[in-house]
Image (cartoon, rainbow, N blue to C red; front, side, top):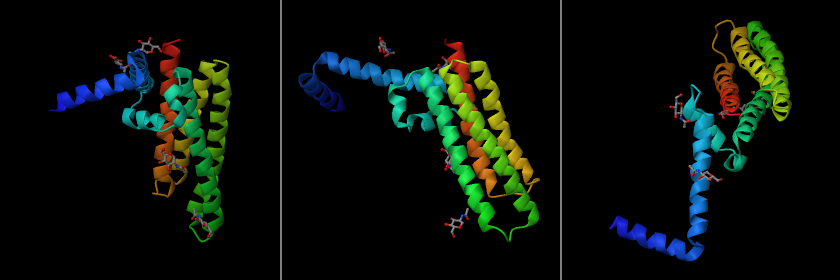
Length: 183
Ligand SMILES: *[C@@H]1O[C@H](CO)[C@@H](O)[C@H](O)[C@H]1NC(C)=O
Ligand SMILES: *[C@@H]1O[C@H](CO)[C@@H](O)[C@H](O)[C@H]1NC(C)=O
Ligand SMILES: *[C@@H]1O[C@H](CO)[C@@H](O)[C@H](O)[C@H]1NC(C)=O
Ligand SMILES: *[C@@H]1O[C@H](CO)[C@@H](O)[C@H](O)[C@H]1NC(C)=O
């Protein structure tokens, strides 16, 4: 039954669009998915990498360099959002323990730095300065670790955010690796 239904659907589609159009659309979608899979192939969080890239509206038409740009941008946006949250956390939580307040203050510096590294990485990408990107993205990853360490082993509101940001920055790093391998 299913096969017959599929056959009729296919006939209807061919009738509506013509075989060339359909072939082109199929190729395109196969390519996009392949390319995102390839871009994320070196990520240790492959599913997360694929899902975050796919969720971006521009990833459909992107080449590898475009996907790298998206990966960096996603991490950058995350860093600036986290910075905003850190600012309100610092302003709201004046009653928090001094060690927590201290942690929040330190994290602001780390995420400010991370946002800067990611911004620089984006300009480096447009100049194909992949080695610089590699260096700066690694610093951004380390910034998340430093923020986590700033709370001296205490669980904080930052732990979960640090982990997600670290994954985003790390994904960007691995997409750039694939980009370099394929140039
Ligand atoms: C990918 O797209 C190109 C044209 O854009 C086409 O030549 C190629 O066959 C496609 N590859 C796959 C696996 O669909
Ligand atoms: C991912 O990498 C493995 C080995 O490094 C390779 O065999 C495989 O074809 C790659 N997959 C994609 C989608 O590029
Ligand atoms: C950072 O990105 C992750 C993964 O996409 C998301 O779940 C999280 O809400 C983001 N955090 C902020 C503060 O935007
Ligand atoms: C800080 O306080 C404002 C206003 O009361 C609130 O909207 C915001 O969610 C708070 N931020 C945090 C991180 O608790």
